[in-house]
Image (cartoon, rainbow, N blue to C red; front, side, top):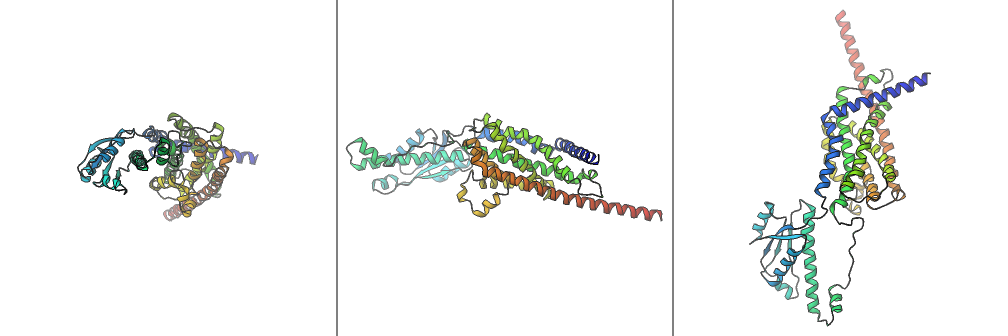
Length: 413
């Protein structure tokens, strides 16, 4: 019977903490924003911005100091491309920079005065491209258009100078080594399908850590769990607190995980090659790893606002260190090692390979094992730091109790 009563008490305490944590989530505006509103709204906003995948008719300004037939041919071809539109002609670069600063155009083409002369002298002609780097899509359209037009014009000039008699010889001279451009795993060649799947997984981790950190800060201020742990046995409630809190967050993010990993990609037609079972096998340990990582992080900061400053600052570096938006071979070994301690690194890699590249679970077995390992490690660390916090809380409570007892003695005397 004692075992039954002990188990019953443990379950009651666990569900009490679960219930209290649920109340705290909906009472605290900050926690509510980061755990529910941000995961619902932010992916929609971010995906909507890049929903077109590619941009067309990006306005540019041209500074033509050459005023020759060759420079005009370059301008006409750029204007005829689907991605760029020549909106203004400027007298000099100062005027072009003014147009860019006023956001009337997104870039500028500068053709120097000796452009045609150098080409006809068998020297290299140079055209300078100036781009607004605030949006990668416009930069890509402006730069690639200038690059493609210059390659085509260069091939035509080589063909004219070759002195060939057949069209086949001219084709070989223009393109001695031809290639077929077939985008793999990203048919549209767009920025959204390329980067947003990884961003969705990062949003899941960051919002969880922010919400848990703010909730833990409020809990420390109110000391909501002290009554569950007898003073004589201060460590008895560690597992109850960890399980109760994690159960609350898991129930919320079981829904948010479906929203981020399944619904949002479907709404915006991102590549979806993974089955429901495959995503379940990935998301279950990933959400738990993020929860326990958030609980550990929340115990390492004194004020709940510090969690927000820390995690928001780390969002962009974590995305780069995951190897999705930056080649992993170019990331220094030290920073690769640092990235291994974050669940998002392995979650992003596994999700992108499963959902965007059509990989199987065996192909991402290493990433899954690392997620399970991080989940176990952070669960153990969370229990340890909560145990230490309970110890400090009880020591403080005992000291206050002794102080009150001493004061009552003094009053009686």
